Structures are given as structure tokens and as C-alpha cells.
Image 1 (cartoon, helix red, strand yellow):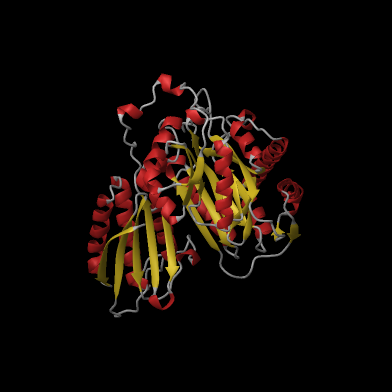
Image 2 (spheres, rainbow, N blue to C red):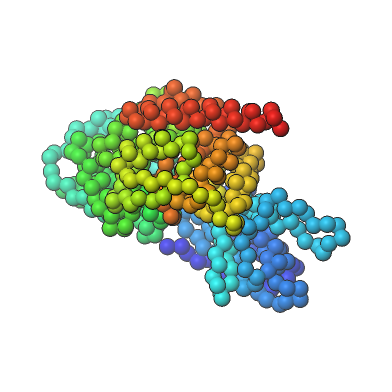
Length: 505
């Protein structure tokens, strides 16, 4: 669980802002954040505190606010709690004009809060009713090279070709905390230090994530009690669906259907948790992992082009370095019988969406409607090392198209991302019209995400800021080939649309 490091209570006095900044800076150092990340976090805390002092309290009103710190193996989170005027920065326009020269001293709040959001990995406002407001600013801790295992654990060339273990009975069950080190060693023996999720090289992180429910680990144990297999569900947001992954089986115990047996328990755990389904994202550098998804009952529902940099290392995936950004397929399997939900899909995408739901074996009910006359809610995440951004529309409003455009510009032009994914909640009226607006800004069809939103399925669109040759992708299923062809055609159509609008402007 998160460790609460300290709390600092300050008067709402601008002269104390330097104390808030120093407090954040020292906590960043304690969390061993890189200097740039620590400076960005300290600036974000100071800027947020100054804005709250200026706007959350009436002139002359004396009050206090609290800055708290929580530390986990994965991140440092600073919270600012106050009992002033309720506030939601997501409702401020990012292009808000600065105040007139003769107006009372004040800064344009919209641009400031967009900068605060970009300075950290996640910024979240929580309305606690009579207890006031809480702002949580999260910064991921660095993931240094994992410590090397002892010499006796280092796999030699001979070890990679070790003979199969004798036939025996295996136990498939949930991971026990003391076995986390064995999982780290198994991942090392299987992938070396090339596995993209570095959490698996740190036993304390594996334990922590399983305690919070963000990771559901299943292991295969041989007759000696050794962990010889691992498979997990990943639930970073504890949502209604989970991603399957982090799979590894010791070479000496392969060919005994341990992966299949672990998958059965994982699906049982998913049902116990009430999950709607499980998704997987196999690579397109080969077709093996796609075949595995098919064998487990997964069905293609999307394509994720250019999701990771070409320099990303994936051992045993390709014989040579990738020539371009890595692309993935999106597979989904329902754990609960899918219920029909009205879906607001653009007319021109309805045939392919109907084909996707037919392929998934899910009912489809098409609907139409416009967004409600209220402000929307949009969430943005940014994976710096992957140069990847994701925009999730949580509530569609009259301002959402402008918010999406602004977020895409921030990610591409300010943060320098090369691929952006956009998720639109199909259960909400206005999704179809919002998709059309996004297409005019360069987003193209990418597939369906079943259960990816709190209120149902999402329409997945994406934006690529770099070239990508899809003829290099290896696709296993015929429907996957059909879906990729549609995505290619939409990518070209949207490109022509954007070019025509640019020439006409």
C-alpha cells in the first residue's frame, strides 16, 4: 500500500509558496526522481497552490490547506487539500484570454492548469463535498536497471537448452508474496532484461500491485515448490476489463499446457472480480502471440498502429531491430454474456462496426443523438518513453471536440509524441458527431474497445505523427487482415480530408 510520508499545513498566504515548493522538491529527491522530473513536480505544486490561494478563497479570508505525500514503489503522489470554493479545471478553456490590463491582478487559469497537467504524469481533482477539494499530482519513479541475479541464477547458453524436467504434477494458484522474487527471476530467465514492463524485475512492486488489485498474478508451481510459470491480469485503473500479459514459463517445463491452465484460473479470477472481459495486444512482428490469443478464445476488434518506438527491444520477437514503430492487434474475450447497449456510431463506420461485433459474438444496437448541452470531461495520459499519448473522453459535452483538438496539439506539438489514441464512449449521444470532428483533425478509425469506458464500449481512433508502412505487419487471422485494410483506407481518407481543409483555409 501507499506509504504516507508527511503532511504540511500552510496558511493561504502567497509568502509561503516557497515553503510549498521546497517541500515538494525535497520529497522528489527522497523519491529519487530525476532532476527534471523533480523540478517539474515542484513547479506544478507551487503553481497549483498559488492559483488556489488566489481563487479558492475570498479576499481577506484566512484559511489553511494541506500538502500530503504518498510514496509507492512505482510513484510519488502529492495531494493538495483545501476547503475553499469548489473548482474543476477541466471546465476552463485552454485558450482563455489573459485579463485586461486594468483588471484586478489574475492569471488566465485555463492555460495554467493545462501546463500543470503536462508537468506531471497524472493530475486528478476529487470533490469531497463538505470536506472540500483535493488535487492529486502523480509522478512515476524512475525504473533503473534491475539488480543482476546471483551468478548461479545467470542462464548460460547450455541452460537455455536445458533438458525437460521429469513429468510431474503442477499446482496452478494465485501468487504468494514470498514468491515475487521467483517471478522476477523467471522473467529474467525468459526475457533477459528486455521485458517492457520493468515492474516485474522488482519483487516489492509485484507484491504491491497484487495487494492493490492492479495486478492479478497466477503461478504454476512444480512438485519441488518452485515457480515455473507466471501469467497475470493488469488493471491499472481497476476498470471493468483487464489486459492479459506478463506470461512466462520456464524452458524446462514448456510443452505441458501450463499457460493454458494458468489462463483458465485467470479467467476464473476475472469472473470472480466481476470483470466484463479480458483483452490482449499481441505484436505484429510475428503471428505466434496472435495465434495464442485465438486459441484462448480472443477475437480481433482493433489495430494499434505505432504504439511503441522502433528502438523498443522485444527478445525473440524479431531477428533484427524494428524498422519502424511497433504495431499491435487488439483482441477481446467476454467473461460475462454481453448485453445490448445503444451505440452512437458514425454512419460511414457502421458496416465495419457491425462486422466487429459479429466477430466478437456480441449484440449490437445502433443509435443516434447529439451531445448534451453541458461541459464534457476529457482525460489525457502521456507515456514519455513510448512517445505515446492517450485521450479518453469520459463525458461528451458541447466543448469536447475543442478539448480533444487542444489535447492532441499539446501532446504532439508540445510533448513530442508520435502516436495518439482517442477513445470515445459509444453509449453517449454525440459520439458519432465527435468522431467526425476528430477525423477532421487527423484521427482515423482504429477499432472498438469493449468495456473500455465506465459506461460501456469505446470507439478507438488514432493519430500518427510519423510515417508507418503497414505492409510490414504480420497478421494471423483473416478478419484481422480485413480490419487492417479498413484502417489503412480510413487513414488515407482522413489524410486527404485534412489536406483539403488545410488548402481551403
